[in-house]
Amino acid sequence: MQRLPIRSLAGLAAIGVLALTGCGTGTVASADGPAATGAGRTIPAQEVMRLTQVHEETGMTLLEGPVLDEDGNLFVVDVTAPEGKPKVMRVDIGNKTSRKVHTDGRGAYTSAQFSPYDGRLYLTDFAHGEIVSLAPDGGDPRTFFSRKVAGARMNPDDIAFDEEGNLYVSDSRGLTEGRELGRVVRIDRDGKKAAVLADKLAATNGISFDEDHRGLWISELTRNRISYLLLDREGGVASRHTAIRYDGGVAQTDSIAVDADGNLYQGLHGRPAMAVFDRYGEHLATVEVPAGAAEGLESATNVAITPGGTTACMTVSGPSGGYLYTFEALAEGIRQSNGG
Image (cartoon, rainbow, N blue to C red):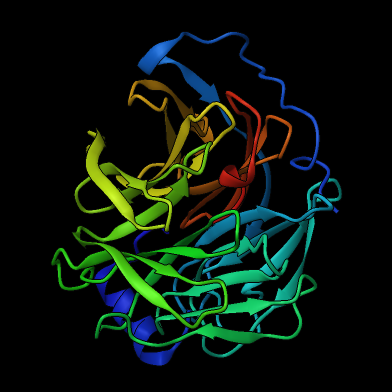
């Protein structure tokens, strides 16, 4: 999730606010032709549509959690949408339209992910420390998890599911205080058991399994680093190390997605771009919004890559509004590059 200003987060917590054609199939052709390889390579992103404008009630808009369902429909959340406005929306890029799937008077939803276990859409409510779920059509809202974990309430940001449907959550505790209280929390698929897998993290943000489900990539927003957690057979952490340090200037590490080749797509807060790394930490490319279109855009939070295809849909936001952009991914999409 793109980090809101501290006062905005505090305010949201206090008041409790917070049929795809383009991305569902195919590939995106680059108008710029072949690009350079390595860290200097630029992958151009093309604007598809503006989904939201700044909300008068909250003073901003922030798109997150793009995720495709089994039929290729794209779902997106707007973190700062007020009550009555779409907090979860379904997008038809072919017709460049969207419709409200869910709204309420409470949640500040920062990510969306379909469970492989029950097929429901899971949302993280950053402001209230909860995880809720919806039926695929947006109905039947349920609170899946709302308890404290190891004595502390979560600020859940992103989700990764393992193949059995257990949840791995980036808990961004300590962000507003500027303290390294972030955690990675594992929640059993029935919501009855939760455990801290890693702690003392700096505003834990992105989380994604690698391509083989052997370990987790996690990003720490206020340290601009990506760590790798190797998991054991029981879903616990066997080892942990810093894998990538990103020198982004004013930009910070946001959400993470992983493609079929194991490449990492690191969203950026503070710059409408994504940095792409391979599994060994080599900076392969940067996905860029064209300079002329970047004015009024401040972040590229997350991406969904078509399962079995290379078309990528990226959520981009700022004072100009909330947009969808597409680009050509380096490899095919899998579950790990679809939501979270």
